[in-house]
Each structure stands twice: as structure tokens, then as C-alpha cells.
Image 1 (cartoon, rainbow, N blue to C red):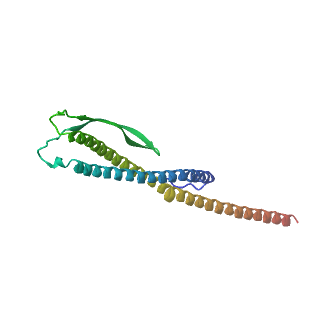
Image 2 (cartoon, rainbow, N blue to C red; image 1 turned 90 degrees about the horizontal axis):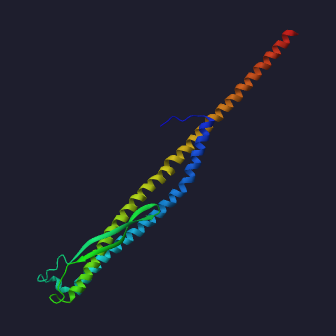
Image 3 (cartoon, rainbow, N blue to C red; image 1 turned 30 degrees about the horizontal axis):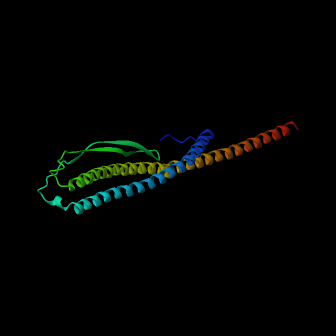
Length: 207
């Protein structure tokens, strides 16, 4: 760390830095509070997505109890083939957002398979989409948590280090300059007194 210069120019620089820090801090703190709220929302979305998966799986079990029968081999019936994730800007943070997805359904005979397979296909599609949404919701939550941690570090840097340090530096410089000014005044008075004494002595010599 550079040594603090005790001068009027350094005082001006410290005052300008303090103004800058105090001007930036409110916007940083506002962003921190906004991101904290977004983390709360993202946590709720992630919890809801996980709950939706559980609900859907329970629904499948209730609607299609026959799936427990090993006689039905329906693995690979629905497969996620592609999906598109776009960026969403939330309080300056880029977050993933599921824009679309496509599933491929394996061919099956409508005559050779039970009618409930159609329901199963739809439920598997729903489950595939919901799992993907839950995964992306988890990514959004983690990204926002990192953003909150970083902005909190910046707020703490301003509140606990930069602003207090600038104030301390200003106080040190002002004290130094004040002492120096008083010392100059004293020196000037002593010099005037000495000059006066010299003039008086010279006057006495003349007389």
C-alpha cells in the first residue's frame, strides 16, 4: 500500500474518493437487495419444480399402476432430442431460461398396445420437461447465489474498508495540515517579534 501523502493535494484526492465511494455504495446495496430477493424467488421456483416432479411421478403411479408389472417393457418410449436455452438478464446477471424442447416418441402399434400407453407418453413428456426445468432452475439459483456473494463482498469492501479508510486518511491529513499551519503562525510571530526587537535595539544604538 502506498504511503499516505500529507498534503492539500492528497486531501483533495481523498475527499473526491470518499464522495465517489459514498455515491456508489447506495446503488451497490440496492443491487444486493434486489439480487437477494431474486435468490428467494429462484429458490421458490426450484422447490416448486422439484415438487412438481414428485407430484407428477405420484400421479403416474396412481393413473398407471400397471407400470409396476414387469411384463410391460416401455423403456425408451420417450426421449429428449433437443432443447433451447436462452439468456435472461435479471438485475445485470445472465441466467439460463428454457425456451423450448422437443421429445421423440418411439414408434408403437396403436392396435398392439393398451390404450393407456397414450396417457403414459404424455406423462413421460411432462416429466422430461419438468426435470429439465428443475435442472435449469437449479442453475439459475446457483448463479444468483454466486452473484449475491460477490456483490455482498463489494458492499462490505466499501462499507468496512474503503469509506472508513478514506475518512481516517482525511482526518490524518487535516490534523497534519492544521498542526503545520499553527506551527507556521507561531514561527511567523516569533520572527516578527525578533525583527521588532532588532529594530528597537538599532533605535537605542542610534540614540
